[in-house]
Length: 52
Image 1 (cartoon, rainbow, N blue to C red):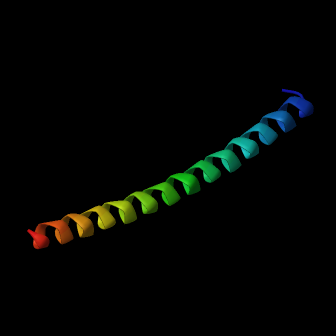
Image 2: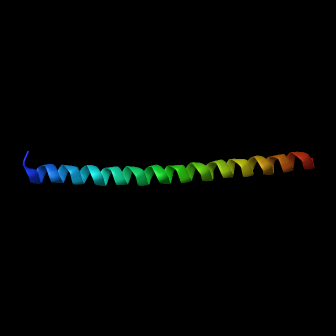
Image 3: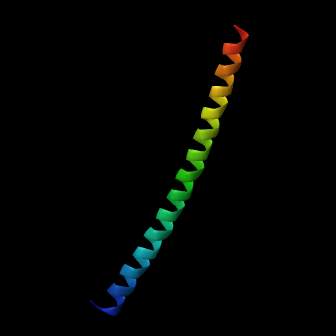
């Protein structure tokens, strides 16, 4: 491998690592939002159940 190809491969790996970290952070936020939505649904179902 020439130096240029090696540098290119390293840059690609760095870019992919940053992209992976960003997607993992996005997934974590979505999971937190999902958990909050599930809690809210449970609260509403509880409220509806106690009204009958």
